[in-house]
Length: 267
Image (tube, rainbow, N blue to C red; front, side, top):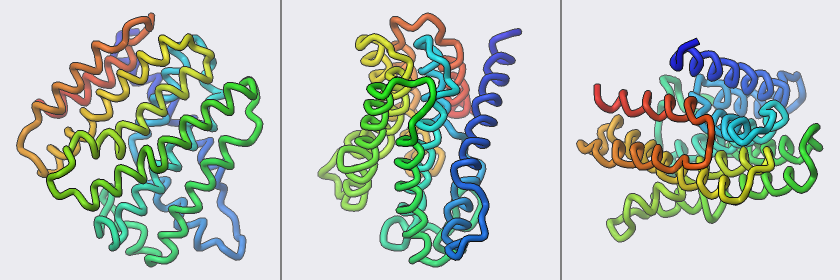
């Protein structure tokens, strides 16, 4: 099996497992508050790339762990990411009408239900992580949950969004992106390492990779959206990310993933 085929096969395996686990975590139900559940599922299952949960599972595997027990944490990351998108799109934030080719949550369900859907997804992330997972020690489970929790609040997504809302040139784009985007990728890589019981130095290498990768991803997104005409920053951070995988024996999947994102910028 060549490198590209191996990447595609593993990526499809990860995504299929994530989709199934998300569906189990938020099953369809005719509960009285079904409209809220529908709003949560509407944004959660809109065909996202699942990069963050995939990265968590792959770093767990790269560190010698079984990736299947890490699925609750991968799902939690995707729920947190989705909550942030719902809230980002609200009129009080970025006021967007479309996301991934579909109407945004608040356009379909109204602002109040969209707000609740985002909040409920954040709560669901913690419910998912804090169910006793099979095959993971309580110490590792708690540490992974802490890492992910920290990435979603003041020191991560929420703090980054606050900086972005009041971005007036006094704060560097990199500072915003570190909190709003890179923090969650760092959490994915670190949590994967922790769940696998990796050595501290490997966790540090993973965090450094994810920091550069996250910045590259956000600058690439800005370039794709036409917010900047310069893609050199994105390419530079992606190249830097690949130099920060020292100590890992099998980096082919992560290297291929980064390479594919880089190729998109060069087209």
